[in-house]
Image (tube, rainbow, N blue to C red):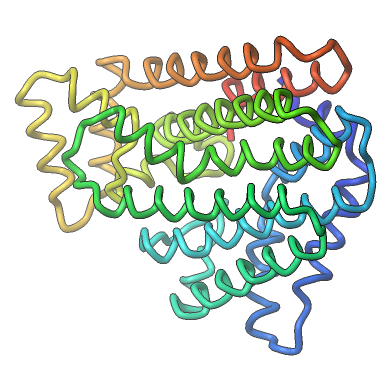
Length: 323
């Protein structure tokens, strides 16, 4: 499944979004500009902004406000990445050093805060109370998701709790992106809810696949390290499945690894071998596929159109991607 085929339908607008994203974070404070540019230029696929553009286009709107709304979504996403890396003590982000490793935690937090302020400044320029409300609710949900993750012990094996975290922390921004576009396009309340449900489902699937990819050896071919989540002691669906279905002695071994002062690549490969034996990765991908099916079902009542087909392709891309 080729994402570029989808993005080419909003390519011209994405060029404008990209230029505006970089232009609007130019300041007279070099530290702020450098940190923001570093992460904004670090290889993101701009999927969330594309969803804003596609959903607005579905309802016939291609005005300037879609460019601003798409920027808002990317700034919010980027702000959370900066904050997440500090909270998670992450060393890498998108196959390069995390900003915190170069400029420090304090700079990463403050630049993230600046991007949050940019989000709400730009939202006021849209002069659309519904869009403002959507994004206000989204920031609240994302903060809740981060707090749920912080409060979670690494030895928790509750799959529903994991899904609650990614619902709040990750998926709500996908959902809001498509709902924002639909709102700008003047969609009915029913259609906005359908697109919100679609976005929530693909957002959950996206994060589950991301968590599965972290343990897939083939990912090394893309230049990305494997096992980062394990080394950061993040409890994701593959690990939850392993800790639930492995024999007691293997569960104890995995928990012992999680308690090590340093989780090495040898530990990572040991855990991956156990996951392969117990089918933890295929199980995780099956759960993701279930959410992709739910996303397609949410789109089903909408009239047939090129954009509807493209949104279906986005959902399918999520489970077949390798990055």
